[in-house]
Length: 144
Image (cartoon, rainbow, N blue to C red; front, side, top):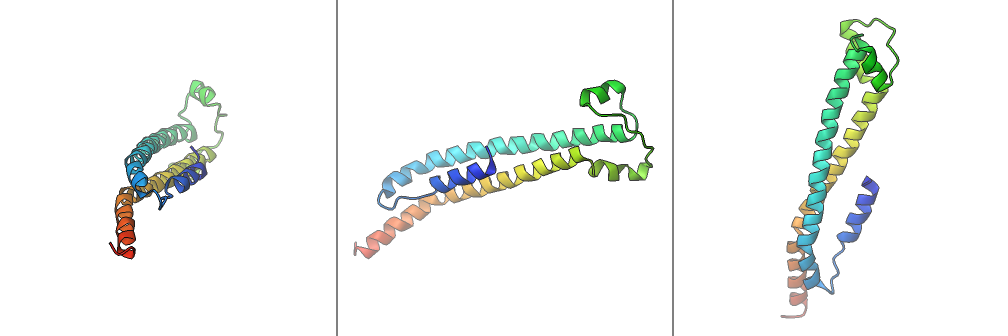
């Protein structure tokens, strides 16, 4: 799910109908479960992306040091690297490589999405307290 779609869904789900506080209170566990599942899935995806980045860095190191086999080059659809790079400069090539940059951007995106979901789960966890406070306020203003 795209981050923008997630934000729209959260915006709709977070609305509390003040005329149906009892129903809203009963919806809280389902909302909590819904977003907790999403959070768990996104954390797993983030972990996988980080592992994929490590593998990609290793493969790029093999590529830039000239240690990658022809079969591996063909498998990755990479052309042989023609330059001889000093050992101290390999990191510069690896971390400026387009594939590495794309993967790091995907990780940043996924990290932001995961952080957002963590905050949504925290807000949902405090939803019962907000509903209880609203009920108490209504009782207070009605003189009960």
